[in-house]
Structures are given as structure tokens and as C-alpha cells.
Length: 348
Length: 79
Figure 1 (cartoon, each protein chain N blue to C red):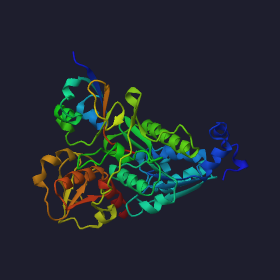
Figure 2 (cartoon, each protein chain N blue to C red; figure 1 turned 90 degrees about the horizontal axis):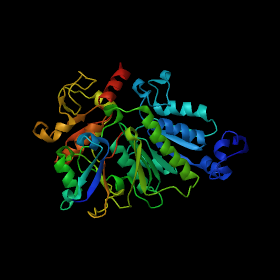
Figure 3 (spheres, chains in turn orange, blue; figure 1 turned 30 degrees about the horizontal axis):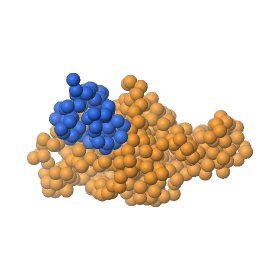
Figure 4 (cartoon, one colour; figure 1 turned 45 degrees about the horizontal axis):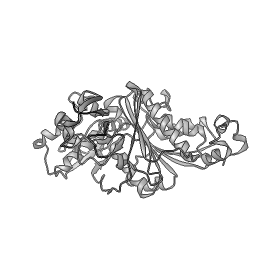
């Protein structure tokens, strides 16, 4: 609840007639689930915490890596190797000790999705895989929760408020891909830090305006920002009903994959040739993602086949494509090569 | 001379077409779908996932006499 002692902290936003004490009170009662505390989650969480969103849960299974720090503004160099969810909550508590913050250092999966989402009023998608985006969309629709999504690719970003007042969902803008190749993560394509800040700022703005009940808030559009020519395109969609049948593939956690005896395993690495890090702990067959459609005869249709990339995203795209060709024996290696190396370092 | 229409490409689609935008004659897409036109012109788009907007509306029908802009938008994964 918004109290008199907080007037000074929030004074500059309280001055806005759309906020005032009643808007600030609504913010203080809000319960927001943020999935992903990386490039988008970092700046977003600063703004949400600073604005006085009263209850914020941060879900992220990953640890802080030195290569995150150029864009993931929440973390400090001395926090490398700490769990992101816990480091985030610790840092945000220093920014605003008046709000409740909870860390969930777990991967967002089909198993915990409903429990996490149902206790919150709004979900923010700051994840970094298409598979997770569809999963979040699915559970927001099932549990009737508004979703603020954000996503980036090199110099471009997308954002929007979805599933709000019967408006379109993520699938209305991006129908499922029918086995086509999806996009890659920042770890694979590269990204500039400020783009994350721009898209996360649009997301935070939508979250705050949702809770202060801004009547101007759109419910049927997304923004697409391109920093290279400073353009912002608004695209609209209408609500359509979709079937939610995706994401039923087999997968293995980095821990379980690390523990497996790999001498007899078939492992297909869909990264580019010479792509680092190169792991010599197991034999792999290298078939870069773009070559998969032309090299089907090299991929067995029976027996378990483990598919790996850098982080688990391209391997997912490969499996989606191969599943559309009838493959049923593929297992995605969650966390990819980075997950394997992290696990190896932990066990060292 | 026939009408022209702008096509905007985003994300990995722009990387594969090698351009962010182009202006084409509407005659090129009068008798076939936009998807057929772009995947014939740029075969590397055939295995890509993308959504098509006409004048800012996802899934809208193209009107060769009135439509001004087509956008091809893939989902972005990064975050």
C-alpha cells in the first residue's frame, strides 16, 4: 500500500495527473512476474522497482557471465557466477527497499509455468528463446493474464502489450512456425547494450501505464524499433483463437547431459563451423542449422539423437524443422555448449 | 506505368534479402501471394518464419489499387 512516507521517493511521478496518490497506490499493489533477467530484464527491473511496483518476482535460471555485463546493467563485475535472479533481487532491494522482491532461480518451463503466472497480475516476457515466448503466451492465454513482451535482434527490437482486453496474443502476431528456422539469441548474433535499454524502457512504460489504467494504452498493436534508421513501426493484429499444441519435445538439462556417458551417443552440433567454444569432451557431428534441410540423410531417424548448439535455441529450431519431416527421436540439449561448460566448471 | 508498393524487411529477413526496404511494381504480386513473390525472389526465405502485414495490419488482404506498404517481420528471439 502507498504510504505517506513514500511521497518523496515517488514525488516526480506523483506530479503526473495520471498517477497521483491513487495511481501510486495501484502500483504498490501490483504483482508482476518478470521472466528473464538478462539484457531486457535488467533495465526493465530497475524501472519497475524504482516506480514502486509493489511485488516483483524475477525468474531466471542462469548465472551472471562476464559477457553479460556490457548490456545487463543490473549486475556488477564482482557478481559474476552468482545466480541472476538472486543477484538481481539483492541489487534491486538496494534501489527500493519498500517493495517486495522474490527470486526464482529456475528455468521457466511447462512444469512451473502455471504456478508462477497465476499468482501475478501481469507477466513480462524478457526471455531469449522463441520456444519460451510461445510457452509464456500459451499460459497467459490459459490463465487470462496480460503479457508485455519484448524481443531483440541485433539493431532491432519488438515490444507490446498482449492478451489485454480481448486483444491479440503473441501467436496472433507470430503464428507458430511449422518447422521453419527461427531466430537466434544475442549470444549467437550479437547485440548492442543500448538497444536492450530502449526496448526494456518501452516494456516498463507499458507495465506502469497498465497499472495506472491509462486509457490511451493500446491493446492491439506492437512496436518494431530499428535503431539504425531511428524508425518505429506500429503493426496491428486482431484476436484469433489458436491451438496450443507446441512445446512437447524431448529435452535434457545441462546437468543430466553432463552426467551422461557420451561414448555411444549420437550428438549433432548445429552451430557454425569453427564456432567457439569448441568442446573436446564428446564426439559430435557438425551440421550448421542452415545446412540441416540439405543433410537429412546424415541424421538417423531411430535411436536417441541429441541436438546441441550454443544455448539451446538453434537446436530447438533444428528439432522443430526435423519434427516436421517426421523425426521423433530428437532430444534438445538445454543450455547448449555454454550450459555444458558451466556444468563442467561447477563439477571441477 | 503501374502502381508501386513498398516492402519493408525486418531482422534476419532484411539480412537475407540484403535490404531493409524496396519498391516494387504491384503487377509482381497481383496474381500470387506476397509470400510466393518474396520466396521466389529470395529463395533463402523459404525456410524462415515470418509474418506479413499490409499497411500495418497483420494478415490483411493486399489491395493492388490501394495498399501502400507491406512489412515482413520475423519473431525475434533475443532478450
